[in-house]
Length: 322
Image (cartoon, rainbow, N blue to C red):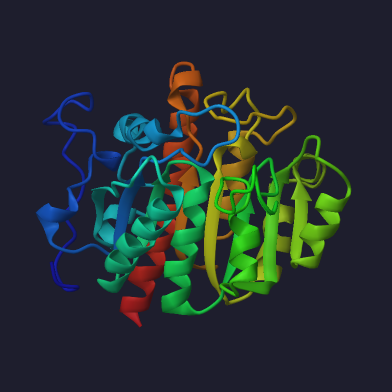
């Protein structure tokens, strides 16, 4: 597909029921059906880096199944994302489940290939380990990027059982490797017990600002989004969303749930408030469907990915119109 062609959108639900046919994200075409994409939705079925409950390797397909009900017009952003840019499902990046270091290398190489086509990535995890190779790849293209990290946890610990690559360490590694813009790093939705106060001290030294879930509750989504926009500025932005940033009432299907989290409404409203930011790629991780109920978690994750995809599609269309 050339940049001048009309994007190919989702399957027409007036002709094929939403519950029929293959479960691509939002019922969009596969990447091999359109040749190239402006936004490639890819899964990474990997959860060998988890420290508690496994199962996020099944998250990508659960999100795809839940995304069957997504419709082509997004009224919250007044946009039809799949008409503005070619969005396609790029399938899964198959990685070695028995060797974390090899898996990290495989993810980075696959992301390099996809970004090399000019696509932006909307990645469905998998556990949070995958954020590091994705950030490495994005930084090769854009230089050190601003990071907005939605999570109950900091994910800036040093090691677990001596392992440097886990779902609790990706952003410490990213800071150490110089692939993040340390003037524009933020956690959102953090809460719960820590190993000690030193965790917060170390995190602050790396350059992170923290907006806790209690801050979101007290200050509201609009004020938080405004603060984040000011911190990010016009830098290239990567958003990484651990679904456990949501309260277990809104996302029970995850590996390390913590009480007192954000609502799905708050998360979506904050993301919509970031529509003017230069979003270059994003991920949604840690959906573990074995612990889910009535697809609560995967529905929340599919809508989260939809808002992120809408932001990227709008920006691509606006850039082409200039």
